[in-house]
Length: 364
Image (cartoon, rainbow, N blue to C red; front, side):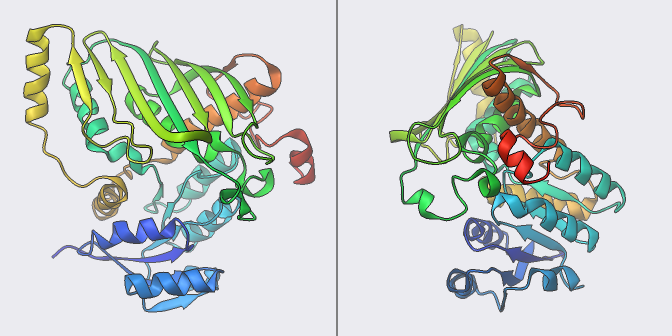
């Protein structure tokens, strides 16, 4: 019989999507308790998903010995401390994006995890599990893609005044960044998931759409460590929302659908340069076995990692790769210079990418 893992959820916003993912894995997980400072939303989720216990005391979850996993679905500025408490209390941890507010915190978490062998922390990057992107990974691993040339990714969404009426959004101190960090970070992960780490970025960023502290529009030019190039564009001012991914290799082009929030899903288009190679690609894709995607698939793989004591499907290094790109992009915007990666401890933004005034106010 498959071992069920018990999850304590903290948060009542994006947590609803997590609960749906756990719900599709009823044989793997159960959620006995939810914690949220928003009583109305928290109790509503408990009723909707059949959760027996509601609390506003997060520390009570860490103190329990009947929970295997703490799921953190709170605003970004709280993530590091909650993850630390979760690991130190002997639990596994799932944490929403963006994982932390600096590369230094990622490295500190790695040291914390080293003190608690067997405990696992999984950042959330659910978009990578769409069938379209998984098919591209299959073609690459089968040697059918060839040499990578160019990737273009567009994250063109709409966020108006109502979105920023939530008090913690649009502020450096609580959201930690703008669309580059909180929205396009999925694009960063998919870029790294396909091509590996970035080597250098030149970035422009601006606040053009809403009267907020952080950026809502950005354009990035990226060199990858594998030698290919990429361009990433992000705006929260697109009245027609789309996400578009296009990967150019020597032997094929892969193009995503345009749906803004499930762009990793089918139907992707894979185009080869010759009829013969198209036949090979089509044959490989015909053998692909579709399964669950999104949170459902990521949680399924996390269960397997815990039971088999292997690395989680999304690792701390995966989160570091995406946050390095964010850090380097902010540094490039402020200096007007290309910024190399990885980001090491001697980098000016290693401990925080917040602007100078906000870093000073936070004592960083």
